[in-house]
Length: 250
Image (cartoon, rainbow, N blue to C red):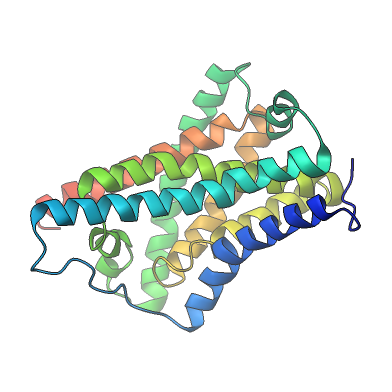
């Protein structure tokens, strides 16, 4: 079943999609032109228990926005507009157990390629902008809000939601209407834009290239788990390398 503007439930689903796009794509784009600093949330007067409680609340809110915007909203569209079963939804998203071993293998290969791409872009970006390399990471900003365990939780869970939305839902819809090449380009650019709020344009540039890489891996394996695995592993390894380098004074 296709979208029908005369059906109220379809309009609700459309508003959900527009809300997700506004939150995860438009807002980061606006932040590029109107950057804001992360406010000091943890007051020195807070007790350890109060700090933990506040952090848990922040973590819950973060996961709530990500789950609703990137998981629930696409599911709502599939159920209300397309009127298909959960099994069919997973089939369209290419979330399947068949060929999982091959998907994980290609995901691992993608991780190796991704770090090569990141290194090359990073060197070129630093050469062209003369920027301090220590400012390229958004982890110090996130550390103002979350402890190390919470950061690992974030980088391990959020990739699933992002891949579900970008390489899953959006890619599936664009592929049907515009073809695979345009679907790869559009979803990758939007994925990059969603990372603009992290740090300068560097994170967005990296994200665009990684978006293309993840898309190609999904096309190759016909399995979204390949991109989910690659994305998650890249995040975890990057975070670990950051803390390892920091411990050695790098």
